[in-house]
Amino acid sequence: MRRLKIAIVLNRFLPSSGGQNYFSFLANALAKKGHDVYVFATEVEDRKPENYKVVLVPVIKRPKSLRILSFILLTRWLLRRYSFDIIHQVDEGLTMNVFNPHGGVEKAYLKQEFASIDSKLYYLVRILKRYLSLSHYLIIFLQKKQFESQNVKKIIAISKMIKEDILRHYDVSEDKVAYIFNTCDLERFCPENRHRFLEDVRFKLKIPIDALVLMFAGHNFRLKGLKILLFALKKLIEENPIREIHLIVVGRGRISQYEKLAKKLKVNEKVHFVGTVRDIEKYYAASDIYVHPTFYDSCSLTVLEALASGLPVVTTRFNGAKDIISSTEGGIVINDPSDVIELKNAISYFFEENRRIRAREIARSWVEKFSPEWHIQEILKVYYEIIEKRQ
Image (cartoon, rainbow, N blue to C red; front, top):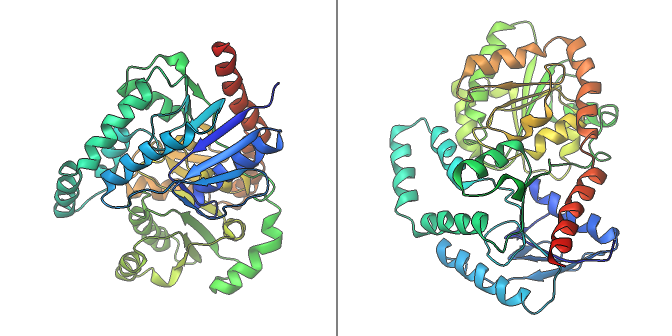
């Protein structure tokens, strides 16, 4: 296979920030395969990585509509200065032959975004803010152009849910959408970390060694279902009075708001907010069950990382990562992210130690089927299919 010149175009390229780490992996892996890789982004952490090149795209930051338009125009101008075989677009843009919407489908996301709001007043505020915003209509128009453009030869969907959403909302032929499930670093996230880090992390957070520890990670606490989880935690503690149950919360968000809720529910001494961390693998290692009761996730990378770390996972049907959970041996997918009782029952299923021990092996085996090596080969198949059709 010949060497390709590849552009990966996205808004923010911050590998230390959760899902952004995927694009660093993608660029590195493609470069190590011998391809010439460029990353175009408006924000970057490292402008001189070892294996690929980074091009900073200057944009007008405010208002959002002008940021989007300036990003589209400037990336188009910059990309024309090169001669790329593949332009792999992730966010806003119209100059690409591969579209990879990691954030999912805006129309599907919006439905679940509003479903996650339980305050009538805040719901009204969000509705008005969204539908009175020029950027909303620009994004909706842009996604239609991206999905239905003849210049886009292939759309990569990272979960079945995203593929179904694309086909439901847009006039796109099924053979144009390649389903390539997401992946994660299987060396960084592994069951062996439990022996390395459990004691240190629990000591630092003042969690008893014999406690049962739940973990949650996300940057949008409301959309990811943290409020529902706190209510479920309260019920779990009430129903298991002689058991130490704790929750580790990783990620940025309105922490003070959720600390107040935890205090109101009288579970604040059991909830540990650690903020954004660079060593999240240590927190998986210190936990027993990973809980991600999200209202919408195209394919949560944290679910894959938790499974790779040997944790049973509880998530919802609105998470594309549910594709990987094939039995209750390693995880449970709940139907309604707003149902406290359904969530509580799913979590308590893994209170039995033997089930958690079994899950360590099963969960890991699921993720190994979607290894980084497999993932890159599937991406390259899409690239070469486009090249072959062009010739």
